[in-house]
Length: 425
Image 1 (cartoon, one colour):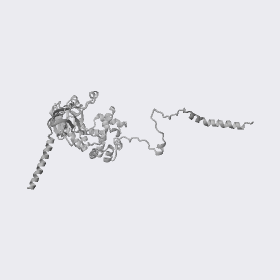
Image 2 (image 1 turned 90 degrees about the vertical axis):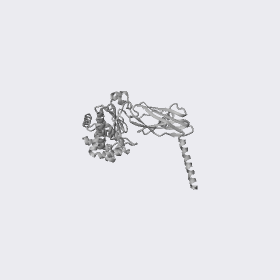
Image 3 (image 1 turned 90 degrees about the horizontal axis):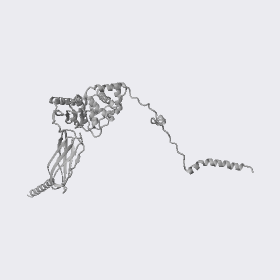
């Protein structure tokens, strides 16, 4: 009987503690919450809540699914009250958040008594709501389209699935999540989903496709070159997912070279540019290809050469080595060390071997000099300039001037004294 009484007391104590915790949680209660948006213009988050004591602080936290950081925002003109109905508005820049993004958000509320409530995490699917989207799934491809004939949309979805298969065969990598493709019907429609690059640029340049999130790309579906664009941009998506790390990005020659290679045969204008540059022995060094060229007259050569570098590595060493290289890059390794680890040479070694592969002579290098020659050779001066040593100005210090004449005066004085001593009486 005594044991039963003791157990009852423990049960009652546990119940009272549990009730206290629940009541503390219920000191602030969420009655309603919702989120909406105007595409590329604004996000709006609404919250209705009540509390036993006045709510004195409200904070909204939100994060698009692929962002690493969490944003926070506060309601404007907030007045503490036991019941609140507030809206938080966040202005957006054009293209700031891509279509198809899942935005996670939650609230934190604090009342006058110090009670704090963090709500559960809610999700908002952010789409380009100017259009009525339809979706076709082909395995890991989620192809979204509007106002496009169904058979054409299915053709493009099939091409996208084939591009994934080619990426897997060529480079040994596959996406670990569905890849979203949003197919736009015109430049004007698609432009609203892109980050602004200035009116002059946008008037002169047509974007055929671009990666806007790690798992999302936009596509101009009605352009004649839509097919190679799919192969190119999907390579960026899949390779980017496969090598994602917080330490280093792929060098541009490899990133763009893989995308060009996955398109298939090199385009005629690129091939001509490469052949002419090889004929003149005027190609880029591999190290200069780590970032895109800023010379518009050499863009065709730049893309042709990065294609050729990837072609050389795969043709000479096989696809398995390329897969191994991407795995090493996924660990955050830098280009030289990654190449040395997989192939046994760095970027300079790749440059030398590729030149030999395309029939170019080795790059000319300066004649080595001994340490003695290095120490005694003249210091080179910039062209158009003459090195001059500064000439010191005469001193204006009187004592210094006197000291400078003192040896001569002493000598004259000595001669005068010697003349006096020698003069006859």
